[in-house]
Structures are given as C-alpha cells and as structure tokens.
Amino acid sequence: MMNNKTANIEKVIYFDMDGTVASLYEQPNWLETIRAEKPIFENLPPMPNLDMEYLNRQLIQLQKRGWTISVITWTPMDCTDEYHEFTANEKSKWLDKYMPCVQEFNPLRYGQSKNIPVNPEALNIIFDDNKDVRNDWKGIAFDIHEIHLDLDKLLHLPL
Ligand SMILES: [Mg+2]
Image 1 (cartoon, rainbow, N blue to C red):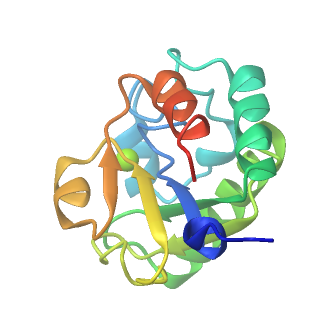
Image 2 (tube, rainbow, N blue to C red):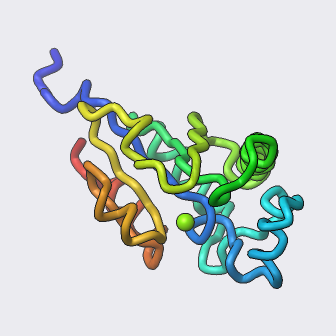
Image 3 (tube, helix red, strand yellow):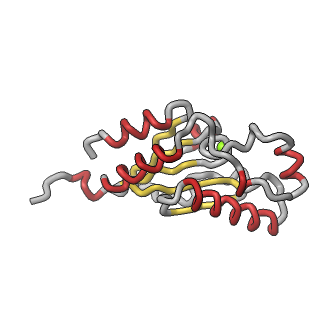
C-alpha cells in the first residue's frame, strides 16, 4: 500500500551544456568560430572536472529512483535560423556520445528563460554555470563546482 505522497511527484534534473558539461570556453577561438557560424559543438571535450563514465552511472541510478534526466541549452547569441538548427543538431549528437541516458533535449534561443519548457508542478533541479540562469530558475539551481557530489546527494534524498 502506497502512502508516500511524494512518490508520484515528477522529478527532473536539467543540465546546461556549454561551460557545465561541455568545455566550450576553454577552446581556442571559440567565439570567432561561433560568430563565423562554423561547426564546434559536436567535437567539444567534456568539462575537465567531470568523469563522464561516472556521471552516466550516477544518472542511471537517479533514473532508477524516478528522476528524468533532461538538457536545456542555448544556441549561440543572435545566430541565423540555419545555425540555430545546425548547432542544436551538433549538441544532440554530443549528448548521444557523452550522455546517452539523457531523455529530453530542449535547445532554446540564446537568452530565453530556461523555465519555458519546464513543468512548474515538478521538482526541477538545474545545473548551470550561468548565475543569471540560476537566479531566474523556478526550482533548485546548482552551480558546476561539485556536480558529482551534488548528484550523489540527490540520489540519497528520501524522494
Ligand atoms: Mg552554460
């Protein structure tokens, strides 16, 4: 007999990509490359502070505990519609390679509120390197400094 009222609450962990899981800003000429609307996102390395095998194992454990794993990422500022589509596709391929357990992918135009694709009734966690995004987030926001440790804490929450 189920008497745990939290059991049916939707629980979602959202990840930003650039500067959170994908190492964009460490790449030489990243801004020029983006301004020229050239490929870059598909071949980015993961962030150096992350162990992607361990991250995926953590995410699979969280999924077993009922969490949905999602991504919300912005495409480049002021880019053309073509580059928006192109970079969204590059980012999707990056996730297939490095975070294959991700269940939802939400590419947004640069600067759009990341609350837009989110169910406000759910328990929504975001990991994002951007302080403005974290401040705008209508849920619980984590920075990027202790992602593995923070995920471990989420895994052991009595939810
Ligand atoms: Mg970012």
